[in-house]
Image (cartoon, rainbow, N blue to C red; front, top):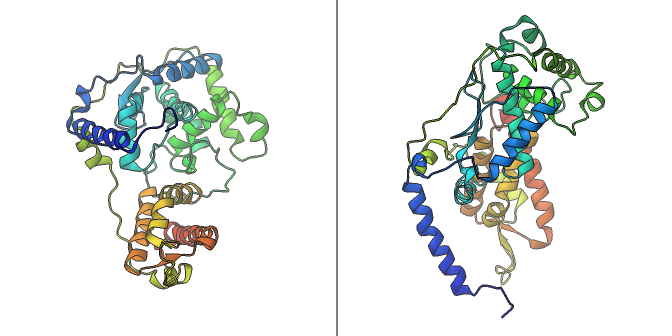
Length: 348
């Protein structure tokens, strides 16, 4: 046996140990897990954010606390980071439960921190209350909607967090613009010079130079979030909620996939439901990214395809698997765009 390679027994034993540990963590209150920023991999990333703020001429150092999700409490210049990023075991559970981690690498986490720092700067100096801010970004009082309809090719907004997030609300537009302005390698003066959002970047630059050394209007608090509930309760609240999808698509799925495998070839061909399950994460992520349709809705659509292809006993010829994947991506993206801009997957 090659040195360092685990036996099947060792792999099975490790899986069993993880199942027991995982269940114990799910039953435990998050507030009792001893989670801290200090000493975790997050600490140095937060310090890097502070260095960037200082290098950009800002004295503001918004306190960072562990929360149930990314965000700043409205009007409060403090940054919440998802608690599971402070512990590798909890990050593993997040990835298992949600099929992805919204920001996993150091680069991604820092990207999100810059965005939240934009909110903190906005709230610390109450910029959103000024007439100039409204003229540049729009009314802060605009309803905040999760089902916004982004234009992926608009040049009136910067591009930072996936999902064309600047288009969600004026407050998010400011935070995204700030994040691009703050990023040391964004080269925003050149990259965005001909874009409609350039005036927004110039506004952030002026505001930072004017207010960077002054005392915030809003006191910077030592903010602590109540996490006195179990990990299982957290996923009951934030976990995937089933999205009902009408059974419109059986005929199209029969066109995309094979209706039967050649006799004696079943072991070589791929069951369509297993093929889709294998690619589900990528399908959901990419379609959500490029269309901006809520990921729960995209996931509901893909899960519906999985259920129907299983019921219809559809197959994939392994020689054509790449073509099939391209076709299902194109098909699902078209349906997603219909849902986003026309209100339903199928235009009647």
